[in-house]
Amino acid sequence: MRKIPVNKLKPGMVLACKVRDGRGGLLLDEDSVLNNRRIARLKKAGISRVFIKDFMLEDVEATDFISDETREEAIKILKKAFQHLVKGSEADLASVEAGVQKIIWEVSRNTCQMISLTDVRTCDSFIFAHSVNVCALSIYTGVLLGLTEDQLRILGLGALFHDIGKTMLDGDLLYKPGPLTDEEMAQVRKHPIAGYEILRRCADLDPLVARVALEHHERLDGSGYPKGLKGKKIHLFSRIVAVVNVFDALISDRPYRRAYLPHEAAAIIEKEAESKFDPEIVRVFMENVALYPIGTVVELSNGEVGMVIDVNKGQQARPIVRLLPPEGKKEAGEWQELDLSKQMDLYIVRVLEDQPFPDH
Ligand SMILES: [Fe+2]
Image 1 (cartoon, protein in one colour):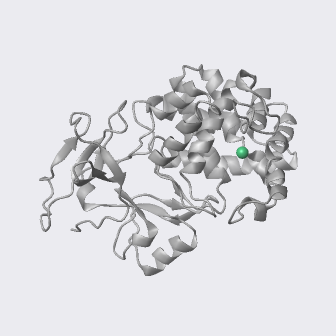
Image 2 (spheres, helix red, strand yellow):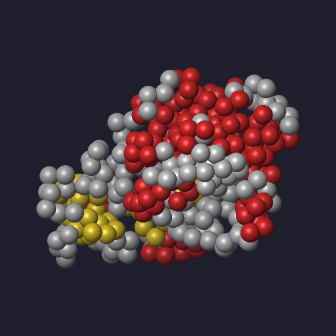
C-alpha cells in the first residue's frame, strides 16, 4: 500500500486502510473502491492523505503496531469514560484498564517492529483517536525504557487521559481553522489544569495519572505550561507523553495545516530535543519510528525513484527501496530493489508525493 495525497486520488483506486471520522465511526472502510463521490467525501472531511492499494506493493505487507480492533475498542471505551469523568459520575475504569492492558500486550509483542502508523483520521474530533495513539506510543517508549508492567499501566492511563481537560473547552476554539488569538491561546492553555482537576476527583486512579495530564505541556527548559516546570521536576511519564504527543499531533491533519510526514515531524522534534524534550526519550523513540514508512515514494541521490518496501531497524534513513520500473515495464516480480543500508553511496534526497505510478 502507498500513502498518497487526497487530491491525487482517482476513481477506481482501492483504499488499503480504514479512514475514520474521529467520532468512532468509519468514514470509509478498507477495500473501498473510490469513486468521485467518495473522493469528495474524503476532501470534505479534511483528510490530506490516505493509503491505497498499489500494484507495485501487492506482495508487501505493512502493518500498524497496534491492531485496528484494539484501537477501535480503546476509542469506544475512552469515549464513554470521558463522558462519565467530565460529568463527575463514576466511570467504568475496569474496562479502561483492560483496554490499556490489551495495548500493553500488543505493543510488547511488537517492539521488534518499527513504529509505522497507518491510522488515518479527520481533524474534526481528533481527541479520542489521538489519545489512543498517544497511549500506544507512550507504552511502546516505556517498554523500550525498561518500565515495569505496573509503571506501563499508569503511564498508559495518563497518556489516554492526558487531554481530557480539552472537553471543557469550546469546540469552536478547539477546531478553529487558523492561528489562535492571545486570548484564545490562554483559554486552550487551561486544559492541563482542567484535566488534572477532573482526574484528581477520581479516587480509583493513581495520582500520577492526573499528574501526566497536568504536566504534558511542560518543557525541560521551563518554557512550557501551566507551571513552567524545569528538567526532572517534570515526571518521567509526563516527559514521555510530551514527546509522543507532539509527534502524533505533527503527523495528523489539523484544521489549519496538512499533516507533516514522519521524517519532517522527527526533524522538528529532534531540533527541540536539547532544550525542550528529554534527549534520552527522544533518542529511544526516534530510533524506533519509521521515518520513511512502507509505501513512501522517495527520490534517491542518483536521481532514481522508488517505493519503500521495508525498513531497516536502527537505520531508519536507509530503508529497502523498490525502484520504479522503466516506462511500459509492469511485470510483477521483476522489480529491482536496493537495500540502502548496504548501498552507502546512495541516500534519500526527498519524498515525492505526486509521482504517477503504473497501474495494473
Ligand atoms: Fe494537551
